[in-house]
Image: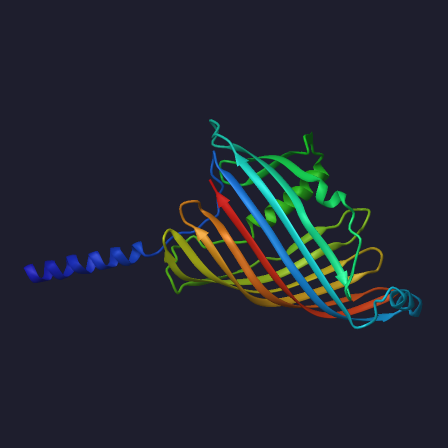
Length: 286
């Protein structure tokens, strides 16, 4: 009998220890915190351009001939400050984001970028609801109308929905796949919409020093339709790495190298391109 009890006790202990190996992941903002983030990406494209001879001649006179090599580099930084919790469980959060670098070059010729792009930052006042959702209150010190609020809300929701961890605990070796179609209206001036379909597989490779490490394998497509009869399709895949801080309930590093294909059609010019994207984002939570 004592042996049976001992075996049962040891078995229960082993099961409990194995259960402790798993972690339930969730991205959530916390009160009285500062989130400093930096984002950068580099796009390199090789494109073949066909279409209106007049437009092609203008490109040629500017030193741009097909095939065209395009390099795009962008960097942005931001700060988020969260406040104290209110009696209803919500708390305020203020966002301040700025583009710090933007360059576009075709066949070695750099395109002029308006200086005000990097001179102006976007400031948004919001609050986190008791169930963890960010809701926009104002932008640049002014109360936003419903249309502006919806557009900003869509952008912030993209990040919040970017990684939807399962409710179950994950252990090293476990994986999950997230699929989520997105439809973003472009507004009355531009018309049309951006339709995004993506599927991302996350595999937890290890947990160490309070951090969780994931492999990220995306497959995605984006379709742009505009009233000016311009359509664009982008598809891609690749491999990324995600680092998640367990104590902060927040991703602190997300990097990736991806391959993409682009197809743009219009009444005057058509573009077929292949390219690569290198993306890197980091966050520090204090």
